[in-house]
Length: 197
Image 1 (tube, helix red, strand yellow):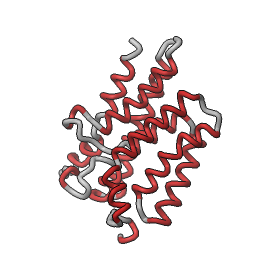
Image 2 (cartoon, helix red, strand yellow):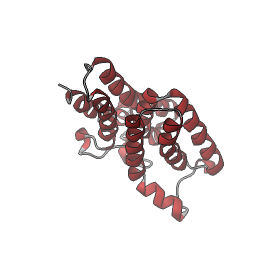
Image 3 (cartoon, helix red, strand yellow):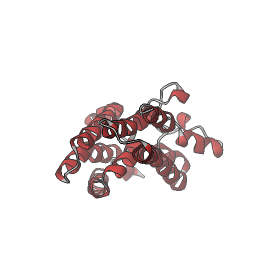
């Protein structure tokens, strides 16, 4: 019964809302822009409104799965671990969706939903980091990487449990790995920037 929630977390996290929203208006976002199913590419290809809708939907995937596990899981010695694993699996589902041959997004918005469950103040701090980084550099990828990478630190400073901090670190690591191409472009100086728009 306990591992039912991480499974549901993965299956719900794997729902490609960016692709679904794009298909609803006659566009396959996997063929345009960065060809990613995430909110950033939807915003680039289909505009701010649909990009924001994708962001909200992907964020809710992370938040609702871990929130549901926290509400409905019975008390047990490994309850906190199963709740944390549910959040991790939601992010992995978004990154490696079974419905799309395990080729998915980069997990930032879904990770945001999980982090939102952990600590709203930590989200606000990382949001400030994200906005400042994007404003100064013009790179959304750099802002996302810094915001995600620093989240475990904010949670630790705010007194979160060890399980929460480790879970955030694992999610941040996955996000960094999925951004390996962006990291390469940042080092080479040919990453796409919003300052050119």
